[in-house]
Every structure is written in C-alpha cells, then in structure tokens.
Length: 195
Image (cartoon, rainbow, N blue to C red; front, side, top):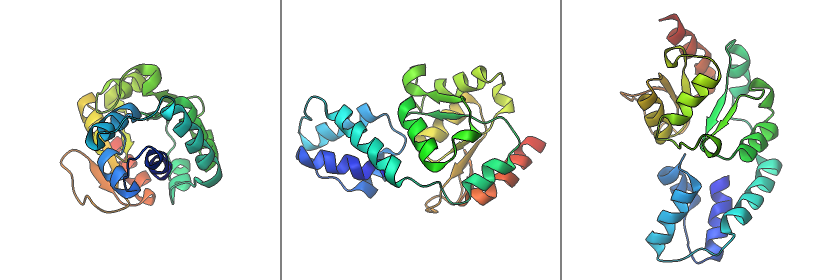
C-alpha cells in the first residue's frame, strides 16, 4: 500500500516505478536509502519536502485502507508470549498501521523503531535492542519477518527467524522457517520454544 502511494508521489517527480517491483526490490529498506537509489537509477532529484509529503499521504491511505493480514489476529491471540514490533518504519507509521488493523493491543508499548534506535535492518541492532529492552536474551526470542533484510538482521542477531511469505516466492530457506499463512505461526513458535 505504501508503495502505491510512493509510486504516485515519484511519478510527479518524473520517476516511474511499478509498485509490485518496488516491493520485490525494497521491502523492509530504510526509506532514505530507497529514495537515494531511485534518484540515482533515474538520474532525477526529488524536491525538498518529498519525504514528509509522502509520509502524510501514506498515513491517510493506511488509516483508510489497511487491513490485517489474514489469520494474524487469531495467531497473535494464540501466542501466549510477550510480543513486540521491531520495524525500520518510524514510530508514527507503526502506530498508524497497528491501530488501523486492530492489532495495537497485542503489543502495548513494546514498539521499537530503527529511527529511535539508530540501527536499520539488515544490521542486528534493532532486534538486539528490542530483546534487551524487553528483558530477554536473544536465545529466548523468535523474530517473525516478511523481508529478506529482516531475516538477515535476525540471523546476524543470533535469533531464530520465521519468514512469512504469502506469495510463496520462497519455499525453503537455510536461514529461516518459511510459512505461507499466519495460521501456521502458533505451531511453529510452539515448536521452536519446545526445542
């Protein structure tokens, strides 16, 4: 959804990209890095204030149209463990997304943003900070990710990782346990904590 808004904003500056391609190429990336690379690829400069305008428009779109991933509400309810969100997104965007999807109650104030921590995935710092802040050793944690750079960050942090891949582009991974539906998550997490 953010990529659709981003593509509309980019188009106004003469950069034409397909939203689906942006997802494949840049899922989980820091926005500044995405914009820097796109400007280089297209030999264009974005106007001052581009990021804040994009974020305003994306927030409106999220509030109006974002829905929870199928089966995620039930999966989170079935997991009787402390939970947090550790995201490369700004805190305001995380809160907007959690509120729009009705998932905020599962995480309370356990929200960790790379913008506050100063470490972006694929660096391990965000996950290490989240584990420490919640009072857990990394060996007592599990990361659930939807991006390759998130998997890299979890592996670098020494945390077992589950890759949610609803498109089934990844069947197996040496670095992560792959699931294609959130309905699989409670059994996978239970199995990891049992081992």
